[in-house]
Image (cartoon, rainbow, N blue to C red; front, side, top):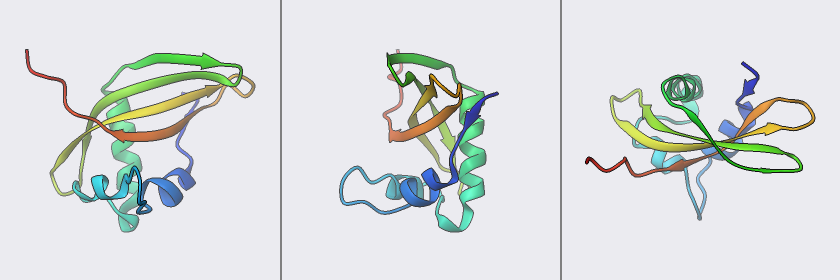
Amino acid sequence: PDAHIPIGKITQYLLVPQTKDDKSGYLARAGFGPSNLQALMAALWETCAHADAEPIGEDCFGRKYQVVGVLRGPNGRNLWIKMIWKKDSLSGITRLITLIPFPPPSCQ
């Protein structure tokens, strides 16, 4: 309930083409872009609703978690992603740190 996705994380990071570790091109495969950032926000929350947050580390600033799941795109394509979140030790607010393209779990 205390989680937050800063709009700047979407508009100034995830949807901005980068020469290294570009997320915008990966997200574009599923139909996400600057013109439908609300759809991306909704899809990120939907992914979180169907996945567990796994603790992955802690430092003096807070605890980090990862969420691995499927991001459902507006064009019908699904993307596997890993989201990194951090719960701030002072404010108690959990914020999205980054999104990483992630290979799907292997079928066993």
